[in-house]
Image 1: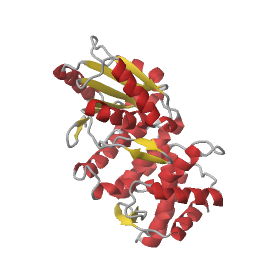
Image 2: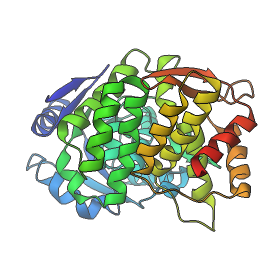
Image 3: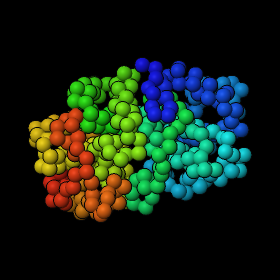
Length: 355
């Protein structure tokens, strides 16, 4: 359980990952090395990571502001300027040390600087370990929507170090639970059942649970890296969830929701939609709701809020030919892609969540 083989790179766990990091640095003779952190991982994670680097490693640290609201072109521009002003060239390496914002944006920055430099992902949150850092998707938010600008490009290696999870507040840790539960819902009913119980009992998932969640995502991505077909199933809960996340991010009247909190709502709404439009039993939809609400508190969403959230669906990057595409469920572990839904069905899904 030390390594998972992705299409063009390895996902390594604990010590094996840092051994490969050392090997990559020595073999490639990089002209310069940069470590991208945010204001939290600079303080909480960089000191630990520095101990894992070869002692003679020379690097520059680039700090960005933490938070989804900073995952934008303005932040990218600042990093590109830093790279340019500190000797960055096509033989440079960017190490992304952080959560989903750092790995998403860092991968995009590296993939576009000088038409592409090597990058390494070292996720420090549960969410980025089981989702953002794996699969090659990079990107930033643009306008009113998440991840509208980006490319699919693989890192040299992904290193999973569970010690970083000890630096997280409980809310951020729980944000990663949504993606782990989603992996069960779209791929493996037994994993869903097992992880539903474990996430209620333990604040930090065990390494084998993290491993299995990453394994599921990697198996899905391996055969469809560019999301032409089956990789779409990873978007379950995300069509509604991303619209909710964007709405709360832009709103001046509400606090921001984490990605995991938003996706949890999305999965509940889309579970009910599945019971109407697909073959999911209403008892399974109720079970999904029960499990998710045992982890994430219910959020008040007014009628006006709902209208604004639904209006944001038109910006979803999975849309095609002016139609909104959903990933729904025929049963737990059996998803279906490219389902069209009337607004009335979406509204009923929100009623189900709020009831």
